[in-house]
Image (cartoon, rainbow, N blue to C red; front, side, top):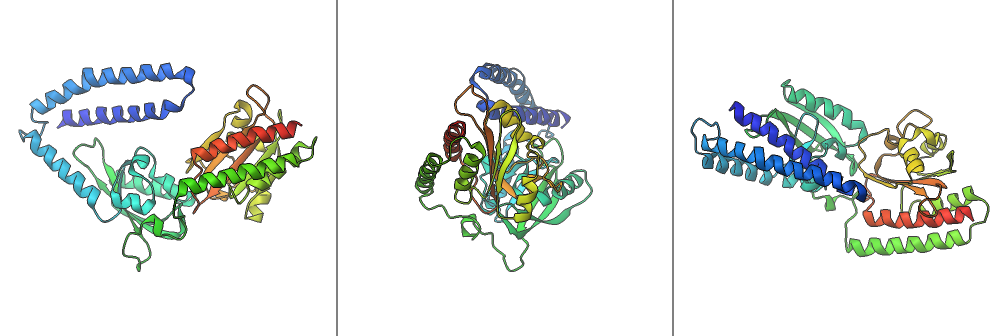
Length: 378
């Protein structure tokens, strides 16, 4: 059994490393050879060590006291099928809240695909205010301190409380104690799990791709007309006009910073007046993501950002991402053409209840950012 647990730990580490290599596919082209070398090394590791080790364990009965390996496999397949078909939304997470498995009911309940959720923290689906407490409760259950229960809120429907029940498990193929999280509506009158399309807060995609493409084209047209009519020689005014075009129809919040060597906040557009004042008073230099965009000129697209201080604190000391209830953001430097200095930075937020920014929308904003930078330089 000790060998089987050691093999499980080695295999789990291998799976995590492969996941990191998959995530590294987006690195610049000149850095891809290093990623490829690492992938080949991991393949050699699987062939040279993991596979012989697996053959040894199976020849010895898998450390199961002589029990046929085929019987173990059939039992594991049965348990997986039961887990996936369970009518209640459940997730299997480790002590760091990283999702190991998500069943079908949980994908419907949260609106997140199992393939996307696996390997990512379950806390990324929760409202910012619930994340720290949820992590603490999961860690306590994983330490063997007993089952726990708490009320949380999903980012996609922050006004609907969800009851999370946590219990510790030790599956045979897991090296350490894991935590089974059961998610149910806290409202006693809601006994069934609703599909995300049934929620009034989440938009129902109907020919969504075509509709969103048309909306992006309309936005590009509106931005072009606004930039052509903007006054020359007044970069902050050009930036403010562009921000007004993007606000509401494309983003719930727009933060515009102008300048090259030193950024200054040109305007902030949002629905909460007090939060708008505090974010407008923030020094852009205290926002790591904006500073990184201004220095490196690289756009960033984040969905359910995990670090609440990625955009620093506002003037009141509260994290900007928490204050604006950000579920996805785009941070784009304003560069007329590659190699030229940055003219400013545009940061767009979307809050709960609205679809996250897509790659197509990020590409459209990247095109608009170059046009805005040219108009600012005019």
